[in-house]
Image (cartoon, rainbow, N blue to C red; front, side, top):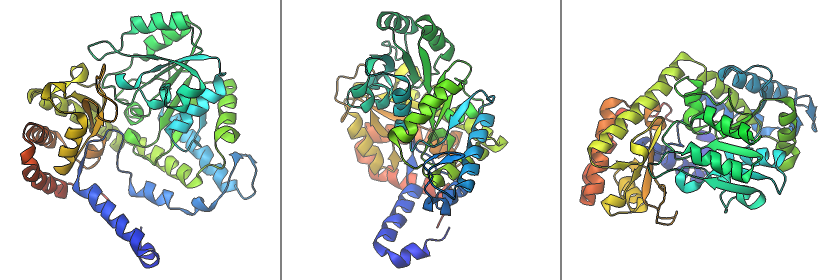
Length: 415
C-alpha cells in the first residue's frame, strides 16, 4: 500500500499515521484483545468496497449494484462455516460492525424487555455487553450477573442454582478477562435444565477454536458471537452464528434494520480474507504458539512472585492481581508503558478498587506471537515486568532493552 496521496493531501493526518506506525513497531503489545492484521487484510479494508451501500442481505438489497457485495458476503459466510467445521444448518451473519453491536443484536432479536438473562459479571472476567448495568445490555434487559469463586474459577454448581432460581431465557457464556477454559458442555446442561438458550461469546478465543487448540462451543451453543480481530487476526468486525433458521431470522432482523444500516462492505471483504488465512496450517501453528507463549509467560511471572488469578492460564491471556504489591493496575500500566510494554489495567475478582483504577493488569500473547516472539522473549518480558514493578526507577533502562527487542521483530508491513 502507498500512502503518498495521503501525505500530499493531508500532511497533518499523515504525520499522525506515521507516528502510530512507529508506536506499534516500537512497543511490546501484551493487550490480549489487540493484534496485527496481514497486509492482505489491510488492503481489503482500503478497497473500493468502501464506496458501496448495501442495506439488506444477499439477493434482498435496498440498493442496486450489489452483485459483487452479495458474492463476498456469501463467501464470508461459507468460509466461516468451513473454518469452524459447521454444517449448512448453521446460519452466519457477517454484517455486525463490531462485537458489542453483535451481542446487542442477539438480545434484541431473542429477548423481550421482561425476559431474564444470565451473564458473567465484569469483575469476574465478563464483558460489558454481558449485562453490566452501564451497558445497553444491562439497561434494556433483565440481566442477572454470575461470577467466580475465590479461586478465580466459575463455580458451575452455583451457576446452576442461580439459573434454577431466576429461570433465564438466555444464558451467556463468554469472557474478556478469564484465563481458564469454559466448560461449554456444563453450560449447555445448565441451560437445558431451565429450558434456556445458550449463547457463547467466543470473541477472545475464536482464533484458538478455529485452529483446534481450544475446545469448540459449537456442539453445545444455540448462538455464537465473535469479533474478527483478537486471536482471529482479522479486521475489527464481528460474526453471529445461529444454529437454525428461526433463530437466524430473528437475529438478522435485529442487525438490519434493527440496529444497523448498510454494512461496511470493505470490512466484509477483509473478514473473508482473514477467514481464509485462519484456515491455513500456518495459522494453526500460530495459534498453538499463542497458547504456548501464554503458558510460558504465566509460569515465569509466577516465579517472579506475581499472583495470577486462578493460578495461571489455559488460553491466550492472564490476570495479575497486584494487591500484594501495594500498587494499582493503573500505576503498573503507566510504568510498563513508559518501559515499552503495553498491558491494560483490569479488575480482578472481588476487587475492592474502582474499575477506573483497579487492582490488576491483563496480559496476552496474540500480538507478540504474530511478531514471531517465543520462549526466550517471554522470559525476557516477564523479567522486565518484574524489574519495572519492583523498581520503577528501572523504567529508562528497561525501555532501551525493549526497544532493542522490538527492532529484532519488525511488523510485517512498513510503509
